[in-house]
Length: 582
Image (tube, rainbow, N blue to C red):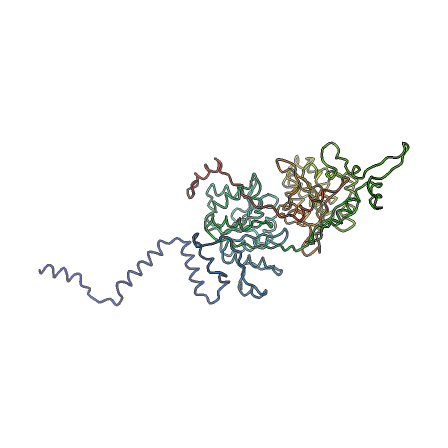
């Protein structure tokens, strides 16, 4: 018994502690939680505590019900609610300390996108070409710099990557990098510009920089419709980590909500859809027939059949045109010759097929004199700089060679172009600088004429882009890739043809493709209207049904091109955090 009392005395505290045992346990548990938390969780809780203690609430949620990300309670992953802004002061009140300021007043859709980005929310922005979607991308890059994270800007083509690298470098300084299959410049920058294929390969490799990404910007995301490369966008969206915020910039598409729904279900986070049909510079569409322009549509006023009829008359031969103007009826026009009289039907006059093919007469290509006349007209009417779209690399060079006798630059402009071209060529080796393509391109740009397609040397392509952006190339013959997001608007856009080969067959341009290219016409702040010209060098214009559908039809829907390949399965097996089943 004495021993038990002694042991009990050892467990009796010598002094009564003022704090209760439960407080000590709570303190130990909180220290343990702090130790086990990851740095990302600690930063999140610190940010949350700071926001709760702050007196000013920055743009509170519009609809609290949509904040519940549980798949069973959420009705829709695509959110179309707008943050109420009655005037410009509301925007500055909700955003007192912006990460980036702009020297101009933002449009409403740009303000909505920026407020969503400040809340670290995914955004799908659908707007016309040259409407100002890049503002959203620039603000995300500024947020990444502010938060000491990374922003990835992806593009479908190298030409767009090169142009955005120059633009972002001028705006954000040397903290911008470019990664392509050929080179790496500033790979440690907070903003990295690359094609979507490069980002996919980084995800497959498990590159270290993926951990630092806060924003991924998908520009020209409607390229997902491409039958060969569209699957790349879907793979990247699926494989990106959950903590990465996504921004999608696209032309106007009819099923934006449906696509955003898929993204939201895949990433288990809401996607805020911001759409606008606003076009800063309205477009005026014309047919070039009989050495004159014939208006067929002005802005959103609808197709004008009267302008189409005038163009059709202008393309008729002189005798048939005179009969049409005099209201000739029925059986045709009688023409006299040595052999007496013959009756010629107007319909048969315009039915001459293009030589060497089964194509209709409206698909005939213009001669050298036709193109010289058109170029002189554009110069005389002040419609330069002009982009002429042709759907063949060979045709682009042929059209540029037809204008060998023209010099569209002044003496001062010619000297400036010559010095810049010499500096560019000096970066090549002596052997390469004497290549026929180099000599031909340098000689053309001195006269204010340029060519831009995938067959050019990268350095020549970059030289042409820089000269065109500085208004030192007056007419540029380019393929469709030049319209894919390259922010180099012109005063006028000319279509050499409205048929293209899509890899399987020849077909007319779809409304979305035409809108993408025609949208390059009209420079914001410089032109009141953008002029679009469709060339008619045959005996009749394109069918009215084709033109009307191309100008007023709805854009192509975004369609999934996803397919599971053996390469994809093998690459996924190399990634630790992902599985083929998941």
